Length: 103
Length: 453
Image 1 (spheres, rainbow over the protein chains, first blue to last red):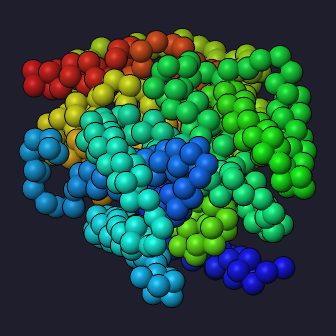
Image 2 (cartoon, each protein chain N blue to C red):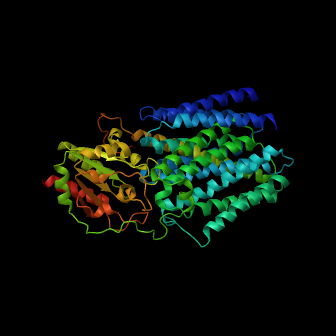
Image 3 (cartoon, each protein chain N blue to C red):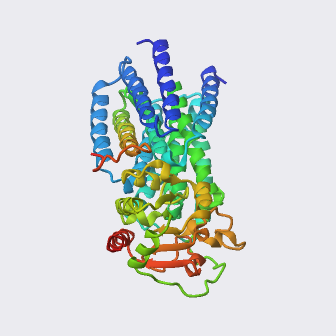
């Protein structure tokens, strides 16, 4: 067993516990934004995709890294933006209607 | 930037994710929470781009392409189409994670066992997430039919695929051969398809939650491959969040996850538990207008039909007219109404309905004790009283008990049974009247009737 593996497992388990604790309290109204926001966070694999571009050969590695950066970016940018778009619509009780759409 | 500094910066990004997720738990703080998480992401990515050896032109091309596509998708998507967008985004995340492991594998050999295990895990989870998400997207978008798609010996085929996946994973891990690695990827991709094909539309909230969780697990596995704590943390957070939602959804259907995944629920003529006896009473929009106009409380129960008919603005408009007459209008939202967790809430928020009018299952059932009219809009199984009868396929599923209201108005396009393929005894109850129409048109007609009063 190597040390980075153990460290990784420790980090993973603790983060999962934090995730459970933090998210259990989210009300049903916010389930969709929670999911799309969490979805954007899973795009953190973009960091791994950027690191992957360090592999300069074979060429297929570069191609794969490019596709990975692209798909992860779609995930991150699309996820955070659409979450923001949804959350902008959630109207605080008592506030006057905005009138018109969201754009 | 040296390795230690990079790790510390990424620790900050991880903290931003946790704070962001926490703030997503309340409507008042949710928007800033999302931005904090996005800021963490930006910092994590920018500092990584500055690392030595990164091919900046590949990164720039990928970031540019991805950003344009992501922005267009996020701006263009209609709120009713949110489930398919989230499904697709899950798939992109899974693809990226699988590819990160793939790049780590190609052109090298002599991996330590733990690295090899992480790579195989990343490919397996990433692969299943990609194709599973694409099939879910295709079903939600109407490219594939939403009903369960089954083929002969499906369970046996899936079982064999599962065994094959394990065998291929072991083989790839031991031999470290490219062929083994490609085989694992291929089997995982096929498995994603065969797992999601037999799952029907109404079970999509579970499937999307699960795919969401898997996309996180795939990212964490990729984090083990490249030994990146931020990937492990981000992935674990999303894995946990998706798992919580998956559990909530399966509880809301009172069916174990295995049943949702493998039973192809609603594909065959499920045994009719309670043969519906009696006739349904059809009504007119004018009569519904009178009923709601003189009610003191109306509770709307929306379902997927509301999304299909794009009727969220029409329902809000009717509610405004009713509120002007002093009628209290509330909304009872079942956890699995629609095609993803919280789907109905987002649609109603789009139509500017304040979120304190949106009641969850328990709140709605409490409110129904003192409700004059329950207006069921494009919902069926979530209000089916058959769920109380032992022997019914949906027995035990918590429902919104609209039959507690004085009058129940069911707006429905036809008498077709719901997704579960079970007759709904609600429709023949004495207190129930049926308004056969498209949800949006029905609401417009009722409002017109209201104005004529």
